[in-house]
Length: 204
Length: 204
Image (cartoon, rainbow over all chains, first blue to last red; front, side, top):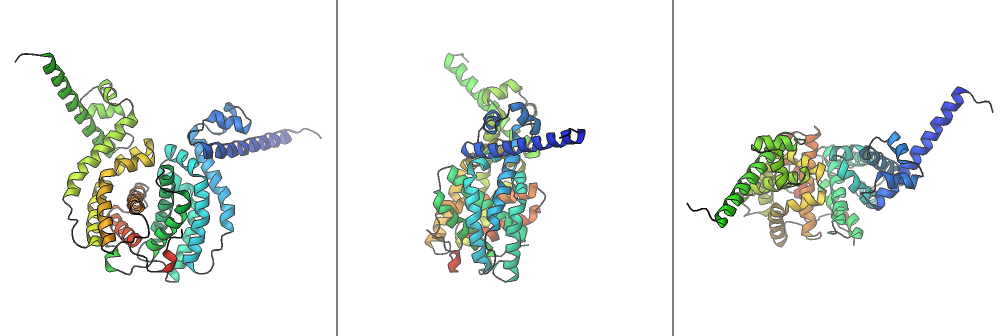
């Protein structure tokens, strides 16, 4: 094979991509075990030097941000399998179940993210799973089973908050992991239901 | 006046208390304007040196923690005035209104706290207002207007999360400040209502 300048550049780029992929996988692994895992520990698991990690991620915050983004992206694959057809309430319950399994598995990584990223950034990283919830909420509103007196975006955010609240509660030993999905679904479905009592109406 | 050893110690203690009070007041003031206010800025407002601040609060995190605790304690005074008698749903709406005014005024301070304290610590600092909500929720459960299929502690935590979610949304320019109290009340009252549809029941 003749080595051309373009060939070398392409090879270097492929090397860098492999290295980034290994670092992200290592970061998700290490931070899922210990929210305080250091850049050195992550570099060791990835089989690269700390300098290489810092070459791609200037500080630990950038690495945690990218690791959470990577975990959420990987989670999308299992969310793709959730049947979102049929009764929107039942579809939402299935989506909560699957989403919760992902959040529960990433509780430690989420804790790491909460200590270096503002809530607005954590919410922004969830744009793709949030869009999935949003579409389902919109369908439920159209079909009259979810409330229309509050904006869809607010309802989606409420689900995100309740889910992350459950993760915080488990981390603080105030909630058992196997109860969380049921509590979340019971809370979110009630919060999304069309109002029946006048006192639950939002004032303008 | 005769200067005794005890007298000097008492005077020093009184000095230190005045200094701590001034620092906390300055911290609440500065962090309510800018979540990134530095220890130097806070010292300047308090009229003391940085060394004095560090003498009482070894690092900025300790100071932010104490400032949030101080703001919550001050807020208790206005929560004391809320009429919690009568229909628990109406009492909860009044409590949400008053609590939200406090949270809204402290949004910037809350942002400062979120960047240095874990969610479990922020929740722990709210123990006293949370107890107030808890008592009201318990009364509402006894009277049959709030659901009993989820633990009281979980419901209180949901209200805390939804309230702080609203603060995050305003900080991210996704929610207008004057809509928040209505959205929070509409969401929390629905989430607390006794279940009417079977799909909203938590599974065990």
